[in-house]
Image 1 (cartoon, rainbow over the protein chains, first blue to last red):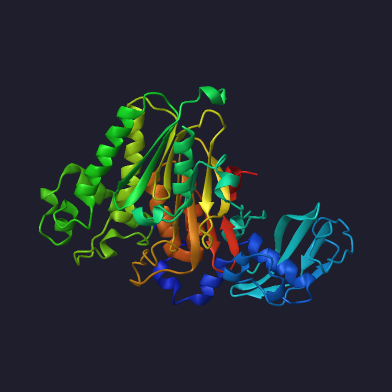
Image 2 (image 1 turned 135 degrees about the horizontal axis):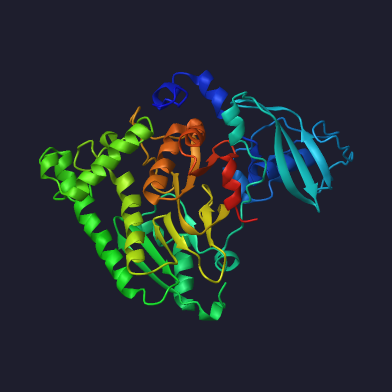
Amino acid sequence: MNSPQLPQPGKRRHAAKGSRRIALGLSVVSTVGLAGWMYSAAGGGSTESASPTSVQDSISIPSTSTTLAPTTSNRNNSTTSTTVVPATGSLRDGTYTGTSSSTRWGPVQVKITVEGGKITDVQAIQYPANDNRSLQISRSSIPRLVQSTLTAQSASVSSVSGATYTSASYKKSLQSAIDQSRAKAS
Amino acid sequence: MNDPATVVQSSHVEEVMGTTVTFDVRDENSGPAISAAIDWLHHVDEVFSPYKPESPISKFGLGELTIDELSDEVRDVLALCDIVNDDTNGAFNAFAVPAPNGSMFNPSGLVKGWALEISAEILEQFGLRNFTINGGGDIAVRGTPLDEDGWRIGIRHPYEANMFAEVVQLRDHAAIATSATYERGAHIVDPETGTGTTDLASVTIIGPDLTFVDVYATSVFVMGNEGLVWLLDSHPECEGFAIGHDGFTYATPGFSRYVVQ
């Protein structure tokens, strides 16, 4: 309305190219996707056999062709170790840059930082879009998929935001479990 | 922060508006306030439910009531529907959503957040300062839990019902809403196509007012991958977080300040 740049939902379906251009801002790989990516690299490309959790079964891993290549970072001017990821799947500290992989929106290249054996940062270092606003959307932190069972999380999480549940599905929901634990405690 | 032992906590779970609403209050003497808010929500259900053939909303959708015959609160909601339809370039159009009675007017996607936000105002009018109201996953926040800096809220993982994709902390006067299709199938309809939308697995919006936060979550979901750019351009008062079916997540620049590290 007040901006000619605002997306037109009806048009985007017929303008796939424009959609792609805007779409990809992201820099963030989900932990699940990344875990699959890492294990894929560690296992010499065998993605399926290395899936560490059941979650991966339900999430498509972004790329089939990604391999880890320890590199010298051209962003931070910091030389990184030429560590090879052990086949066990545990991670050596350092910074790793994935080869450019294609997504349905265009090429993306990802750099990860491993500290203490855990991935502590993920950054997309190659963006398919030149749209500044899309770049603003980009973030470079890992969305953590918090392993949440009631015992682990009820102490600190007081509410769950999710798509609207019906009264029936509420009974099976995490929110219901939290409510019940609260009722017992009080 | 107060001594946790001195923090009063009362909660109430109410089935209303086709979902379940949880009140979590950390102030004393919350009973009358919660009762008043519950009465309000049941009143909203009577007036605005598209599932009740006799509700004014149902009758208006079928043309059995004119706009002049509607009460002020219903006209307020109609005005809000117009505002958000313009605001979202039609991504949120209450006149393009099928209702159970066969009409194409269904403002439910706005009414719930609006009703919950007013519920929060009702609690405040009774003097309550620290509470959350969670209506089917859409949450109005006030104050703090007293024993902590803010309310920790898990954003449900779109594929794993018992996992969080992210945990955020909100306080004072805030709202959070998530749109996704994992619970009710493709219940979010793209007004342009009349079909369900599938680009994103989940969209979460944080902002000051649940009425709009809820609508924007739905709208960004409908807009798909361009939705967060729209939010960034149009609503700097809000932050957004989306999970794509591609395994990537997307967030506006200010979202990270809410994330619990």
